[in-house]
Length: 80
Image 1 (tube, rainbow, N blue to C red):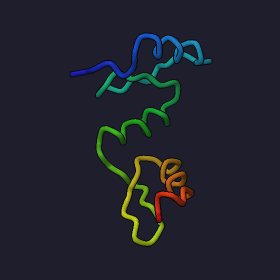
Image 2: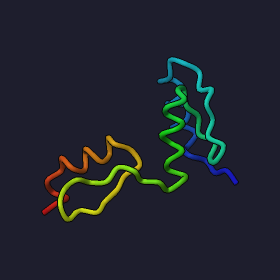
Image 3: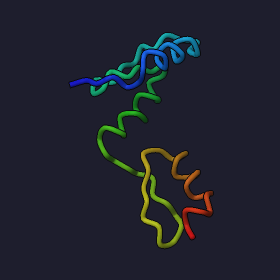
């Protein structure tokens, strides 16, 4: 089953921001992407695979993408 990802207003705003047509479609949820790498990164959210693990000793959090992991590691508040 597919479910709406965002409200109609959010979808409209997203379409206006795009410079290229979104031709890559997630077959799990119907979300669209303008680049294949964005779809591949998004697909990790459906598989549950979290390959990026926090490097701070004692922290066991893992993330779908490297940028989220890096932001987490830079946040000192999360490791006190």
